[in-house]
Image (spheres, each protein chain N blue to C red):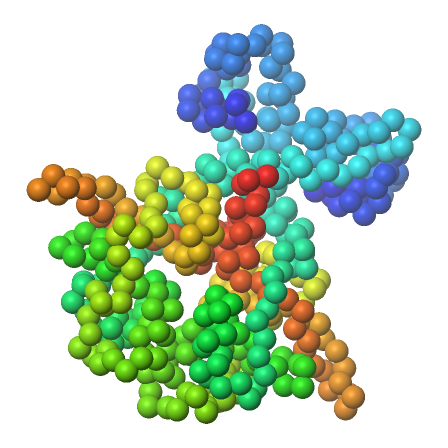
Length: 203
Length: 203
């Protein structure tokens, strides 16, 4: 990392000058420069010196986030039933400090409500203390979700492409009547992803 | 990457077995294994084989995100003036599809309003078509912000620690009266960070 910082600030720079700044001999430095060049992080030009190329770092990072399963980072979802009133759902949203609430019918995912849904309904002339969330939620099949086999990268792509704040992590199960149902087992949100970035930096 | 995948699934595994699976000779494979071991991504135990150790990847990634400036990824902020009504601010929030709106007084940052602020005020018995956002916004000095010199990692830490959805990127300027003011030049949100992760994976 020290070598990279030096090259970034002084490129092109010869191995001799890098060695000077780091108080080592060129011979001691050689294995590190070889590795950084072979990884493609540094570029060596004969008689000119070393250049920094971010490419390989990105490819290493890309591969890294594609290998983190949503199961390893998922958070606890906030779930209510379809007959919960809009008012009670709003109170739950504040108490749990969540952006999206998932709605269940007989234990299976049936809808999602967002802060935007709450703003829209409170603007209108509705009795939110009796209106059930089922009346304002986004319903299946319009819910974007992810499954245990997906990576945090897959989840991030869905969040951005569909412009949603979170995805329920679901397990597909067959109901008694043979139809496919979704059981909510977690949540991946923009907060999950931001927290992951903080954790990576702190580690 | 192919070697890493093989080691992850079969560890501990000898170089001979890795070479078999990848259809190469041990000699051809040796430089790659040496690099991966020297980087600390693989661990080699004599007479046992290679193990996978995620450590160095994380340290490479951590260093990477600490080197991305907020200036390189910032998005365009949505800004209104203090006398904008709550109703108009809500309409702006929907039209621009943003979570936070920044409020300015004489061209300088004076407040932030969030979707939660809007839900709270629409629940109460207020005339939001005349009430100015200045009445409901979070004010300085309680606004968390970031400056051009900070990294996307610094911004992510502030977003998580202060439990906010976004940070204005500000430039500090001295007003005519000598007091320090904040000029909004951008925005870093959880969406910015999620988009960055998608970009890294796609690259």
